[in-house]
Every structure is written in C-alpha cells, then in structure tokens.
Amino acid sequence: MDFGNKLGFKTFNDEVGNVFILKPGSKGFENRPKVILQGHIDMVHQKNADVEFDFATQGIDMIVEGDWVRANGTTLGSDNGIGVAMIMALLSSTDLDHPPLEALFTIDEETGMTGALGLKGGVLEGRIMINLDTEDDDEITIGCAGGIDVTAFKTPEMESTPAGTKTFKISVNGLKYF
Ligand SMILES: [Zn+2]
Image (cartoon, rainbow, N blue to C red; front, side):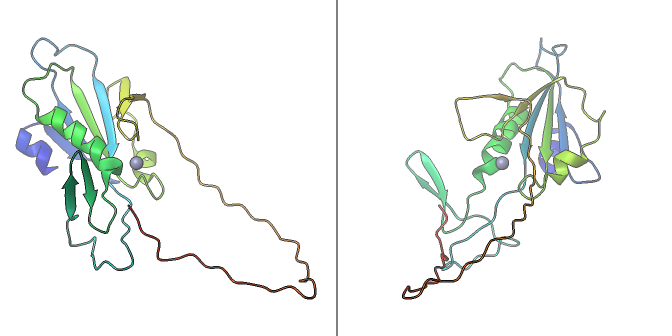
C-alpha cells in the first residue's frame, strides 16, 4: 500500500486484504487494453531446526552468491517475491512503454487461496491477466493456475507380523530447507 501511494497511483485493498495498484498507460499507450499483473504476497515460512528466527518480527537474512540470492537458514520467499518484485519494477519504471496496468497482489496463496477466492468481481477492468507466480523465468503464464484441497480416507487392512521378523519404526525429521 505504501509503495503504491508513494508512487502516486490509485492504491486500495479489499476486505480480505488483497492489494490493488492501478498505473495508467505510458505516453501513447493510454488507450491500450488494460493488463492485470498478479502475484501473491504471502510466503512459505520455514526455518532449519538449528536456526533461531522469528518470521513475525525479523526480515529475511538474504545472501547473494554470484547470480543467486538465497536465505540464511530459512525459506527465501521468492515464491512469490520474485513475481511481486517484477510487478513493483513495472509500477516504478519511468522509461518502459506499457498499457494501463492493474497490479493485483493477492494474500494467502499457500494455505488456502483465500485472497484469490475472496476477490470480488468488478474490482478490476482488465480482460488480460498475466500470472507471475511461476517457477520458470522464460515462460509467461496467461490466466491463473487453479488449486484444490483433497482430504482422503482409507481404512488399512491390518495383518499380523510373521513370526521371526523384526519391526522398525522409521521417522524423518529436522530436514534442511534450501
Ligand atoms: Zn506461489
């Protein structure tokens, strides 16, 4: 919200918390069809077991190694920070030709898509949408990926352990996140 307001563009949010920033088309492109650019502003927040970190109060400790940016012992938030950053770069640019842009920053993609689901019709006018939440930097996704939550139940058929066999309990934990 601060970013859009500081740039002087119409900036608002809806009841669920999605953020909208509307940027007019550049000179000569004012009447081109509006394009919606979408990314999500929540991230997966996980840390390595041996790292003290509070996502509620601390900023990500980023490390730049050559062409790569990574985080020190936590997830980086590049899903979808990279898409959000691309949209912010377009919003703040003064030397790119572009149609009117409707930036849509949705919330809560990772744990239920309540931002996308709560988006009301009629808030945005664009008929073209580019989704910037993708793993591939050389592809453009038009429209948006969907998602579905599935809860499945199955009753296992139990059988007794044959005589003379050993049983083991296997657990996997403390995995590192990169
Ligand atoms: Zn994502």
